[in-house]
Image: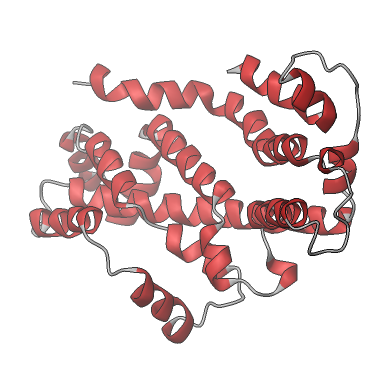
Length: 272
């Protein structure tokens, strides 16, 4: 896992001409900051996009994990009368969707989420796949624990938050990490619904910068600079800088959740 990322970082500090001449190397021939200067030409924009992405990730992960856990716990209870119907309803959405046009109309005309943070948060709140995974974990919790809590006078909400949630920490950490990765890497919803520049997330900003660079290098004649050396544009090294900027924070976060991540993947086979 570490070696490919080290290579990406090395390429991000390599000049474009050196890449064309020697290819990828772990130790650059020439240590340059051209790509970083290009990306950070307007640092305020980068920092603002980082803030938008971080805010969306935090709010979306917390709300999405809560909703996923509530839905999964409900359909995992054997005493829930409509368990099979609700489970099929959740599963059905994994096979069919309404399509892009109804989705766009729902977000813009009914929810009025265009040019708001909710346009990037709402679509990822509930994933049927995550619900089904968490449902399988909740189903392994003995019903006797829930019945014992009821005998002590606990109601459903208290059972869920004080009994079920503490018992499900590994599974919740695993699903929460997957939800966080999804929000951090999401850019398509922002492309559809965000026109306000101050709300552009990091991923969409990097995509736009890369596209503008490619358009510039491919249309030098139209821009009136046909004699300019294309090798001076840090196209490939800039791609690697974008990878470092986009993946770096998540790679720093992942080690803290690795223990829970492994437990969440294996606990289903160890229980029972």
